[in-house]
Image 1 (spheres, rainbow, N blue to C red):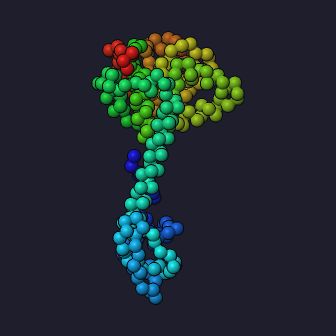
Image 2: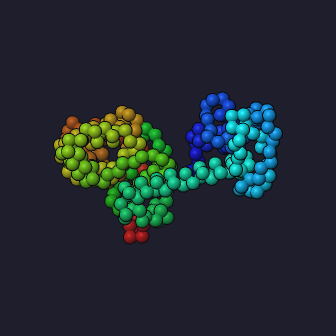
Image 3: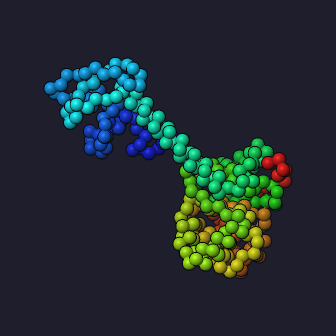
Length: 275
């Protein structure tokens, strides 16, 4: 994964050059450009010949004004390679952490999904979704591969660095009841409003209590207002979902989802035993 941080994606030579402007102070000046070394060299000390600990090559080093006794272990080229290797190792750790996050929230059944056995046209369409204000609805009858395909997208999003909160059809209800029972429900909803992505599997399935319905409506409404996407799977039409909710929430909720989410419709049954 590329490192896009302008303060951390520089080579040793580039970082050293920034240090002259006062923007960045390095604990050890390594990988200096010839121009910088000329400006910083000690006027009374002659250049010394050093042997690089990494490549074994000899290189000239001119002592610095502020640290006349300091000597580098490696040549400028190897210093840059060390920095690049350090960042590569750090990025590997970040990627491993992202994968661990996905495995922590994704049910084992869906972790074992073979992407090659999913509907490839729908998988391509879903994976093409780009993070932004407009969410995504995966709509279709049961056993068409909606949830498995959604988890492939969530894996991609998490590996890109986005934070995802995921709930199945009963998970949101249970956690909502527990959080408000512990008097931390308002804080929990506030956090869900602010995370990158909220995923709701089988949205609208099952009977909701008045409290859960109100909080789910409020969550979706506020995320739409904040331009934060919802990803959800549904196996019912908007009219059916609207009929399952109270009159003052059903129609506005369906309207919001249609306005702020794109739709991918699944029609062909999936052989779940092979996926």
